[in-house]
Length: 453
Image (tube, rainbow, N blue to C red; front, top):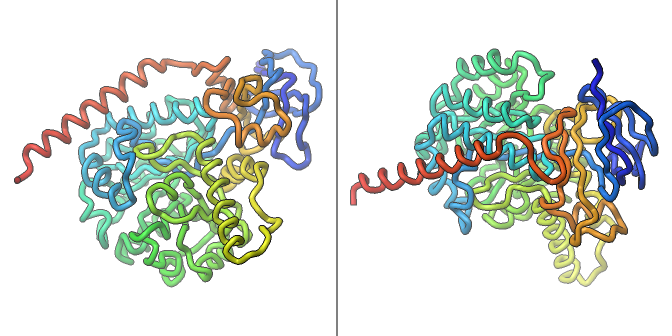
C-alpha cells in the first residue's frame, strides 16, 4: 500500500533549476520519494499544512565528529592545537562504545532538530571493534541519512597523529562494510576517514587509500588547516603518491596553494568548509569563494560541538560574513570597488543543501526537491518574529531563521519533527548523553589524579 504525505501551501525553494521557487506550492511524497512539486496538488494523502512556512531541501553537513556530543562545549576557547591535546589526547582515549553510541544518537538527533537531514559522520574514535558498531547503531536509531566515515582509533596522540605508522585496521573496515553496509542504497552508507600525509607516513597513507578503493568507499581527509597542517602540502604529497581522485573530499582546505587548488579541481575532488571552526580555532579564512573560483562546489560542515554550535544556520552566516569581510577589506586596501562575484544569500542556501549532497556523494537521492529523489524536506516557520515579514525567502532562511524556526523535518519521507517538536524517545537520548558526560568527566579526573606530579 502506497503511503502519501502532502506538504501543502508552502513557499517552496526547490533548489532544482527546472522547478525553481513556488511562492505557493505543494510537495507530494510517496513511499519516501518526492513524487511531485507543483503549485497545487490533489492527492489522497496525510496533509502537512505549510501555510506561512518556507519549504526547503534538508541541510547537508559534510563533516562532523558526532561522537563528541557528550563533551559539548568543553573547549569553547580552544585553538586547533589545543583541540588535539584537550580532546584527542584527553577525552578520546576514555571513550567506551556506550559513549560513542550516546554521542552519535544524541548528535544525530541534534542534526534533525536543526533541519540537517544528511550527515557525514567523521568517526575517528574506533578504539575497539565495538566502537564502530556502536557509532553505526546510534546513527541508525536516529533515522538520519548519514555517510558513516570509519576513522582511526584515538588512544594516543603520539601514536595516531605524529608520523603515525598505524594503519586503520582493514579487517575491521571490511567487517563493518559487510555487516552494516552490504548495500550502498540504504539510508546509511559508508566512507573512510583518513588522516593523510603529514600525520601519517607514506606507507600508511597509500595503504588506507588502497583499502578505501578496494572496498568502494569514498574518502574524506582534513587538509591545509592552521599551523599544524597548513605547511604540510598534503594535496601536493597525495598527488606525488598518485592518490588524487574524484572519490576524495578535502576538509577545511584553508591554506591550499594555487597549485593544490588546481590539483583538487583537476582530479574531480570535493571540498567541505567548516566556517565557524576555521575562524574561531585558527584554521584560516573559510575558502568558500576560492573553491568556487576554481570551479568547485563547496559544502558546509559543523566539525566539533566541543567548540562551536551544531547547526547549519551558524555555518551559513559565518561563511557569508567572513568571505564578504575579507573581500571588503582587500578592496578597501586596494582602493577598488568590490567585485560583482561577492557571495549572495541565495548561494549560501545552495551550498548548504544541494552542494552538500554533491560533496557527500548523495546528490542522486537528496539535496533538492526534485521528483524522484528521496523526501528529505524541512519546513521553516516564517511567521515567527525573527523571520516575518518575508521579502526574499532564501535570505529569510540563510540570514534570519534559526533552529527555533525549524518546524517540520522529513527524512526519506518519515516525519522526525512536527509542529516544532522532535519526535521519538528524546528523553532517553538526552539521559544517555548526560550519563556519558558524567562518566567521561569522572574518568578524566581519575586519570589526572593518577598522573605523576
